[in-house]
Length: 235
Length: 235
DNA sequence: AATATAGTGTGTAAAAATTACACTATATAA
DNA sequence: TTATATAGTGTAATTTTTACACACTATATT
Image (cartoon, rainbow over all chains, first blue to last red):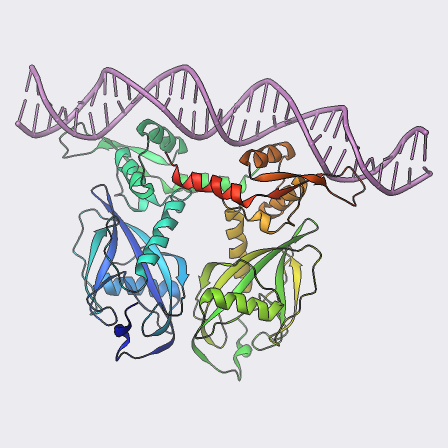
């Protein structure tokens, strides 16, 4: 940690903050939401969107507010995944941070506009080839990425990253991006369809210069029914 | 939350604490470590072992210290599993708590002796039929129990609860206790042995009034090798 | 010494899930 | 019309999971 970052800044005794690891998927590529900081410490550095929790708000509420203020995004379903509490992780003193993640569909992205002045700008960056980040945010990102990779196996998180209507190839390439490996097309389709929670639509892809693929959507009702059975009808 | 608990106590603005959900297994029964509090708020109530983190210690260090001071236990491998941060979860003000879990073998338990005066006593209590706990500790316990239930499927946590040498029946009844369902004996053994990380010893159970079972131990080296392969040699 | 008791230890066949693998179909662009 | 780029499809072999019942053995009891 750069020691000169500490100069002339107030000291914290006991503060909690939130940091957000927000994934997006676009053009077959998995991305993460970063800000350029406009405030010390780490002014002008790239970092995860994150800030201090207020006295009278829950962690979940703080996460939603902070993400909104720094990036203009709101209404995401975020979940905490780890709390980082090393003594010297923040140059101004003792700050522990609760890290949240969310997944977001990036179809035809509106510009990201920070609401307050803490962030100079907010933007999407591919998860591969991530730049150096302020604080311990590189660690936080890595921990979060491992978490969603795990979660992909037993929770329907992929659909949060796709447009409402998607092709099976899009779904597969998302899985491949998160798991970082190639999957077999026929086996992937067989398996996904066998779950029974994908609804085939009477519609096809448009605007492509090759055979258009069928569109599907995720049927959350059916998913819940199946998932509940898994939990309750245990033998 | 009982409002009169707030009377005459100092107010906290911003404090972090640790709470510990420690599981033990004894006589076929899964237990959890509780204390009887000797300090307001919730004086004389039962609660999870937990207390406030100091300025100059990491969360992991705090967890170890606090568990030791309240119960006399130390050297456990603890891991955080969730952070609880509702605004009013603590009657004295804003306290967020990072919850940790650990698993412990209870073979021929030495008495539990709190080191400082925060806890009147510490004791093991069966996880079924849990009494009412102070703060939001019942929620914390439930969240922790669900976590280890999940983790049982992909991490070798069961062995932390058993003595070094154990029988397959003991292992099975531990799985049954955590998962809260009966398993098939032959299938369970076949599967466990097929992993190849259980080492059969040249030794048998002693002091039982029936055919003595073979003893096994968990071979962590072999486990690591297998587990690493799972992670790296992905197709 | 015989017997009761209580838990140990073992095998197989059927069903289900997973894997590996390659070609035809179709939409658009040139 | 032809080139190109992706969509869409089936099967056999292998592996994993499931369901299921009885003989064995050490001790305790009579």
